[in-house]
Image 1: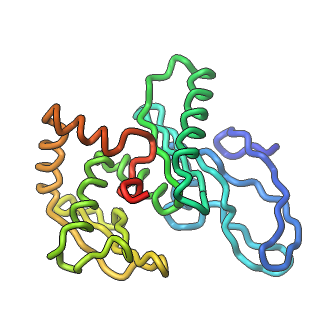
Image 2: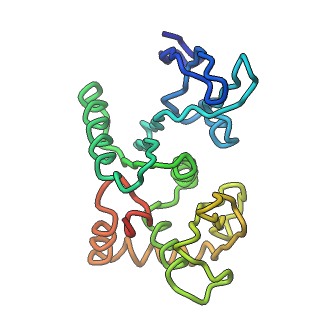
Length: 230
């Protein structure tokens, strides 16, 4: 067991290098909180990246990570899955984790709980949380951009997906990176005025019937436009 700079216990693990199979001791970060230095590593794509002591190969530990903001309150869980169609089982694991957290700390308020299956989606959810944006509304906007022809880039939901572009601190636009599913590379950007987002949010969240419809679209912890196609 290791103790990090925040006083959190972290489990020492033995893993093998994916290139040379040499065993190494690693101490992955599995819990993140607002203000942690490890958040910067996450946003830079360096969280849980290990360099093999024998062959110098750098690789990422594919381990579950929990972000928790008790002030929010908010729990965002990254559970890497090779088969995204198993998200229902992952939601059950998320629910079990949440129950465990609240059994240990019953004084906490019920949080917003989110499940992510990709590291990029995990980063996106945390970025949206920090920006104060409703991720359900953002996923609804993504669906409209992907499934309604005539957009700036002729987006194709079969070949492409959208991720919130948190690199641009611009309150005037809600920006997205367009990723190619086959290569997982960002090939373009698209955006809409932030005022449009606010209008959509007011329409969906301010109308009881539409709010219920939003809950039906995203009834659990896996709040993603992807679940609508699985």
